[in-house]
Length: 585
Image 1 (cartoon, helix red, strand yellow):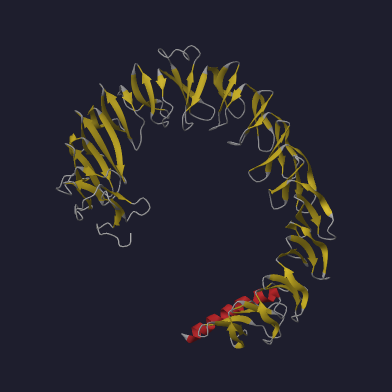
Image 2 (cartoon, helix red, strand yellow):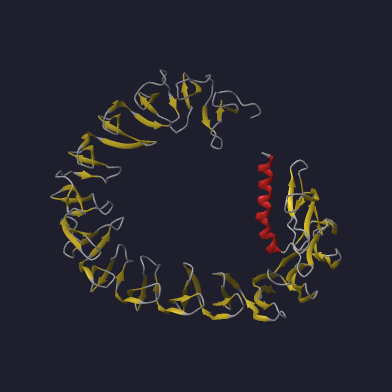
């Protein structure tokens, strides 16, 4: 077992050789961080796993350029290859060395030290940001930032900016006197003068900016790719901008090149491959690449859905495909899409304003270019295409748009939408439930039927002769219609009220508690607060009561479901689910 453990350690060390080689270990003998479990401390071992530098450190870093940053307690120092401290352990943080210098924090202030531990720049900066891949660092003192050159140990930009944010190795965004600009990293000169009000990065390379109320674009090297001429620029997806100028809209790429000319009254949200565009009060369609596939010529138009769009031409509505061909001729006063855009309903001019003798055309797409039309008195818009409610000869039927036929030859006085393969229907003023085959689960003999769910199970609360009963999902009776109220409750219970007394049952109709209560909490809590003989208690799911107490009421704490609040008229106190008073409450 020890051999396996040692072999594994050697394997892991060998695996890290490549990483450290890339980082430049540079010590005559390669050294690797090693954790001693017994001492609970870090040291360094050679490639064979033999300890070279004793484990006395809280944390260590890999060697780089013959140096390693180590930590003892909360302070850091630097070791050479022999384990000697070349920088004393006295700093809160030490960053990696660059050009034999490193930034170190002492007493909350940053300064620059060399690899001999000598102070190059005194610890005086409250914050700093080293620019990756360069010898440059932004440092902050007295609330303002300056750019420091570590290699030449001098400032390129003296501390003066309230904001300094690196855009690239070549330039940074700065703020002075409330205005933003861009400076280069060579001599600190302005690539963009500090007269920018606002900026927003829109990609790793591109930034939009606001100057004197107008928006433009510059990149991460400080080059302006689009002068600030637009009233607004909004990012669409990740690589397109919607531009606004003088209340006209168009599309640009991230460099500012025009994709769609800024000459449209509207460029609607991108849907199904197209932008809906408006010009001269007429609508057309353009692609994301700026090609206008359908020139603006329609007074009204909807977005494309399932390969078609509703348009208005010469005062009438029709439907077009992507090729701008009419797949439904413009003969309708109105066309309405269904809730799922699976079918449409058209009203002809002759019937649009005649509610008593209305006729509607059901428009069903067989393909994106072929529609079938069927005329009915009324058509519901809230259904799926396989069970569309249609009215014909004053009766409601269910129509399968895909099969172009009624689902079953039964007409109803009223019909509800199908949900979970069932629907509520009315015949002769009474309500019933049918399944997807048109068979009755519940015959239409009830005044009302309420569908209720408890977990994954469905139930029907039926009303007849002013009383309520309960049926299961297959139509089997659970409770006779003799109750004023029936409420389903977790986990598998029924709260029922009969002759102004409450009792608790299970969903199979069996009795949980033989007691009757003048009050029972009707919310979905368990145990449930109840009252009998003018005393209160909690009733659990097995019908067991807690101790009866005199109270005005008991309620579950809205912030802690395990606790109930009792009010006895004089004071209030908390009890647990067992009815025991909670000490200290």
